[in-house]
Image 1 (cartoon, rainbow, N blue to C red):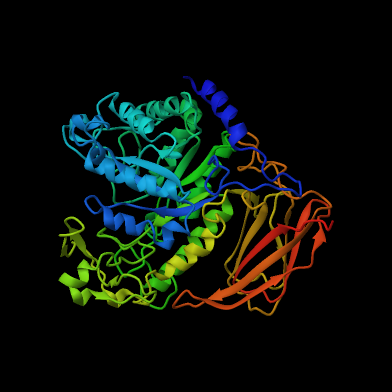
Image 2: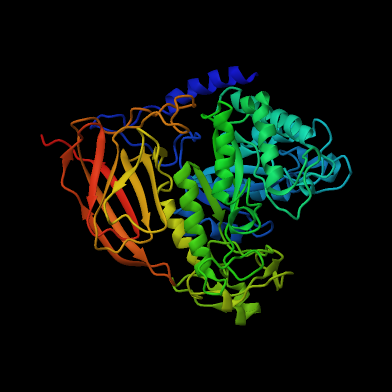
Length: 587
């Protein structure tokens, strides 16, 4: 099925699934949580979850943790082809599914049961499918990747909403023997089209397909076909993407890595990729200049390092690399990227045995076995649940017989925990505040964008001050309400700020353009309808992440005038959430 036929089919089913549920009527309906078509206009804040093979109890516990079960709106899974299909025999999912496929399927189903959206990211190649005969970061034989993509899409259709086709494709080490032409034609276009064909077949299902993140690593070799490495190679690769009409007909979005490493505060090149939000600006501006303003940019691999390892950075200038720096980096990176228009954001769900310490939460002794075989490294948790594991470990074996070993590289210990008994790392609390925007399993779309003429989030008043300030807005279709997040580093709690946003979804520059699968424009509150703002304004403790001095207030009920919603917030503090809600007309 060609791409134009697909969009005819997808648009037909989406017109029902997207339906105007809130509109501008007072009798706004609500939808079941999680029951909606995910489009590139939706806001998603979630986690990257890497389930453990051989430990289903561990995975069953992890999915119940608040970071996944209540705080996230979506989950990203990394799908290693080499693990999913280690032998040709494993391409028959019904008769000979691999252990890894079964583990990933259980995790996907657990997420779907909770109303969470799901995204897959493909990487690596099995030995039987590679040109070299080796497994890992190898070039697949011609035609085999699209066949793999088709098998996975067929198996998970209706359960997986989005696919990224590869990982850090500007680096040769992720596909030895491959080059840029093979990547674009075989992986992105043919692989992407294979997924589209599956989802377009009756019963048709919408799907989001995107390309891959990239790393501006100066010390890594570039993919064959690129003239240079690092940020210069990233710039060139984006140019190659934008020049391919076939690619941009196949995919819904391009991607970028969102991290505090080579494209955050670390070794970025300073020109093309001066920061992670500079990376967003780079690709966004290229799409706009080429006439693709309606094409989205979505996050790929994302992380923030919280310990004192080599990938961490001291950004607060106290001479120590610790969790307070991770909190600051998370706040800055998520604030800049979400404010600019990045509609997806995820961070790793939990510490594991990775060489970098990136988890939002700490590892927990989910079944009590670690405390039995290595009691010195487990302490009680402040929430009364399973104990906290206090250092980086490798658990080898299944749920009932695993052993505890130490990984290679930098190994964090309890000395690196700023608040040892807390199940969460400090930067979790910054991430969780931004996650309020996506509202868990509710359906939330991007609304106004800071600085966008005619579609702005206008904030005035002396309260909204400081060197670091962000304003981000969404429309909750499940609740029929608007939400604005405001961050002001210099807010004293003594001054007032006034926030104004359009009362209906406007035609945006990059979101809600009218060229997507669903058209949400016009939804919201009509002139004359009654509304009020419900405001929570607070600070967060710099050491614990806990709320400080929280104030909750409601503004007087008023009618919508001139297509605008307005709220005056006295005593604005650093972190503020504003909900604009309908108030029924008295009978």
